Length: 143
Image (cartoon, rainbow, N blue to C red):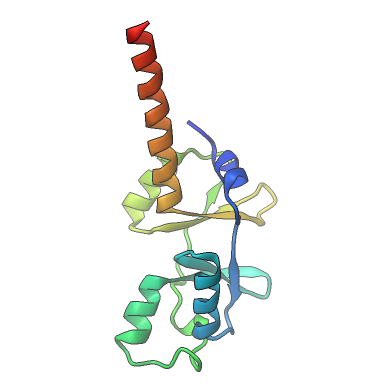
């Protein structure tokens, strides 16, 4: 099983962030530009929360807020669960399942943000690994 460091190295963008004071419209532009579903929200250089498409739907659209006038800090999820570079995909999947989250910031040993993983990143890795195992077993059986 790969460690998170290896998965992050293969991602095209390690972590796209938005400032807490930016408008939701600015955050949406970043989501669209990078074709991603969530951003790590930063405040003064430190992680402050996560803004996702789910926040947009539940805290903006349903409440009738204006994206061009609403700061991200007002609608972001502010409970952040971190993981570290030495954790495995399986550990992260368990955390996501237990804590009911879809995104995990990854911290380096010095406490800085090393990357940002989605449940999609982890599922993709698990499928890749299982496919490799099946291929190897099939090759073993047939040869």
